[in-house]
Image (cartoon, rainbow, N blue to C red; front, side, top):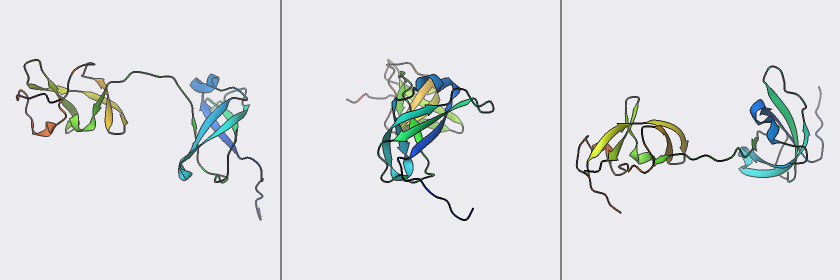
Length: 160
């Protein structure tokens, strides 16, 4: 082609939605779209939903018309932000985590005021906190101040 014409209308955001999330959208619904390159979240309206999944990727195609588009350019990357519900997670501060090789450990405060080393399995990271998938129970206290300098069984003192 010698040149490409761009339409001077509200931009459309086209997204492939996983099969597991396909039923969460409806035509006419208002959704949010994040455009990382311009550090903004825009609202839009679902204009069209594919009635069937693409066979190879098992995804549904959705076309969304963006409401505000002053800084959006054709071809920019965006993310559709869908609410998927809520869940409870056990989180610990990053400074509580002790890494030794590929092992992830924390010191837990025992009832006799000693630090007990415990193997944990981490999940997702949320800013400066880590999700704990295994190795800790809700309500257990972990050492947050200089855990790298401790040894298993060291006496500790709880500070408010």
